[in-house]
Image 1: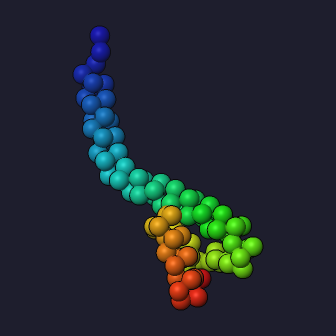
Image 2 (image 1 turned 120 degrees about the vertical axis):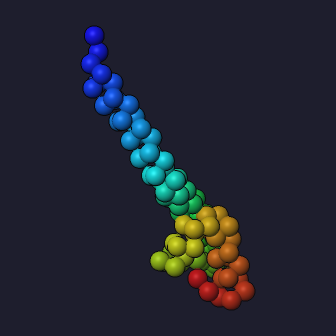
Length: 90
C-alpha cells in the first residue's frame, strides 16, 4: 500500500514544478527568440556582405549591429541596410 506521505510529497513536487515552470518558461522563450533572431540576422548580414562585395557594399558586424540584429532579426538587418545606404552608418 502507498504511504500518504509519499502521495503528499509527489503532489507538492508537481505543484512546485508547475510554479517553477511558469516562472522560467517566459524568459526562456525570450532568450530562444533572441538567439534565433541573432542567428537569422547574422546570416542575413553574411549574405548581404557576400553579395554586396561585388557592388562595394559591406555592413560590419560589431556590437551595436549585433544588438540591433538580435533584437529585431531580419527587419534589423534591413534597418542596417537602410542606415548604410542613406546615412553611411554601419
